[in-house]
Picture 1 (cartoon, rainbow, N blue to C red):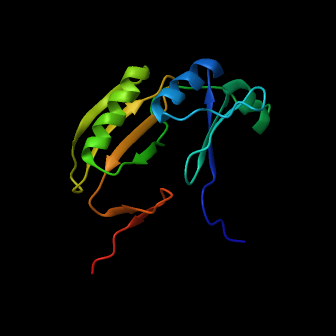
Picture 2: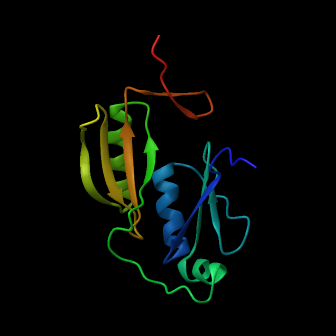
Length: 146
């Protein structure tokens, strides 16, 4: 069986209500809090879920130690439709309480991007690239040279 797409990313958070407010502001999208103890953001392409870190670790295995800190080697990303969108989203994240790690700027690969860390220390890149195009429902594709 082929896995055709990533459908959900779950972030283990220190405080579910604070993280829910933060991401509501950053995504400018109302959360789905239908189920007690977990929050879902139903985004095009893949959902983001927020779940208490301790509960997430226990769900995987009682043997997993809960440690956070430093750079894990993983970033989350949002590819925007323009440079102005990159700037606006990073500003919105900062206003919601994110720490801007790298102000939006030109990149070595021909795009424009910036980074922020959310309130639980997850790193996000917000980027625009001339090689990206988007469908009406928000799916991203590489532009085809004509």
